Length: 423
Image (tube, rainbow, N blue to C red; front, side):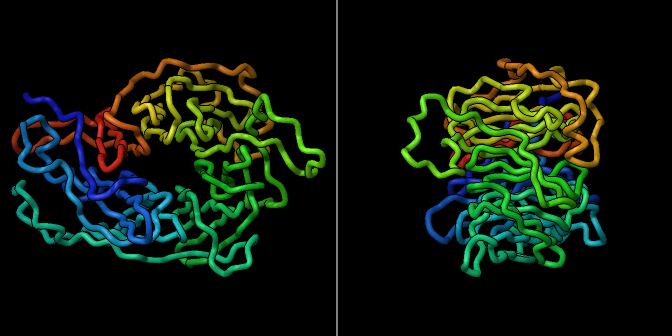
């Protein structure tokens, strides 16, 4: 029997900045519908695009010298104006309704836009595995565009958004982060801003809902801090971590402002371990290391992952029972880390309802562990700027007799090239 392909590739017509792998295959559709991702371009000016890319043919999943045409094809695309800063499909928790061919895709940039992707393609013969008619039936239409007036600026248009997090438990909720120091919680069904709060002293770069919660989210930003917010008590936030002040800082000027902190390294991304939401990952601007933080032990990282030799650009947690953390950077490497053996086993499943009760639970281990051995590494021909995990994809047996193994894939971006690697 022939082996399964472990590498698929797509060449985009433009440099790719954002990507996200669709989190669900609609029921009754061909297995290849799980191999679908959204991508967004990074070009100067106001002529950027968002596209949905899908598998050209299931036979590319088995090593059957199937090189007649590319692995992936563009299913549909739409204009986006300024570059998107983040792009995400609706959470896997969204149940497929009556119209199972429709899926939501959201993007941030100058506004939060929610698109409706429709794959209601006319049925071709189910045994036919040849080239599909071009773009038939796949559409991407704008459902809503949200740009609220900012608390800290006078103009009516909101400041550019840097990132967002889609709530898994209540998919009508999206929280966005902005360069104007605020975070805004939106209800995308009613197209309204539920609340906007000044979250940081400087730009906010990323935000994430606590898994399983519709009240608590965390954010990171240019002020070098990681903060937790609870929508039930917005009077105060909890600072979970602050970047240490750099050594060898020049002495302060004669009359420093009372609120000025020494310049610290911004935190760029924040992400929760989906199987144990006590743990979060983050990294600094220009940093080569990943910090793993524990909500019950604020103040300093409980782990630091050291394996990259250039600045880190992206990370992502997989969806397995014990998820791997993928990290990628300017050293052309993607590294996969298995942190299950390092984290506190008693913490599994412990998920208090509020940030404060979580912070009062016992400190797991005050000493920071340095982890230098990833479980897997892949070297790309050039710098890797972004990555996205697939959901768990079931194995498929094709009518040719070939079969594929179940598991996860990881998509990585280098310039115009996207590679999907079987993990």
